Length: 314
Image (cartoon, rainbow, N blue to C red):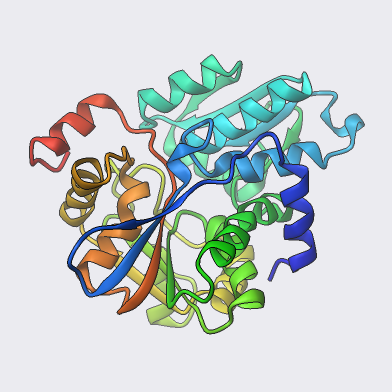
């Protein structure tokens, strides 16, 4: 668990980079009161600016001399590029070959250098915490404690705006977001259930919890590019066991419907990963009472969004 003191320090450290995002009620007739934590309204369209800024702002200047490096499906790359530009250093982002163009364009716009690699090479960089042949400070998108502390500032804001929610529902990629948020909530609102949501095409936490040990699953790329994976990283397994109360899985059709509903009812643009939590809440699988859904990002290719608004699942 990330200490509350570290999360409070992160809140001060990232001031001026991340914004305090609104928590708004979604007007739908469903099993629970649904509140949306709109991280899609961050300057880079994603919560990743919190962890990336905390990691880079807390690093020694000497460690930044050769620049910063990360491996990302897109959003962490934007966060690292943003924070690196602010620090006046170079940023290199290794991305998988299926990364969406919207996110790649944003990384380049922020001054980041993109290194496009096969998925296997990209995943190895995440496992090894390094990108082969690239020097610089590696900012891990998931298991860096300063990144998780930055993510945890979302939890501080939630309990200040809505004390003791019944559940907080978090999209799961590598687990850094839920570890940060869950750490804050377990210490400030211990009765709140922490639920993760993965897409059916890449749900290793659900499979691992069912087996009682980490399990690898077949990974299928989908429009939900910012969540899911092939396995739970070894350092994250004990953290997730401690934090997560329930691991949920939703279908791609349910996720597309949630993207559509956010656009039509809340006038919010969410990417696939950003709609996972709402998809779970709408299905009733996240329980009853007051539930907070983390809308983690809004960086979706326009053609995919158009298809979803027309009633399709990309």
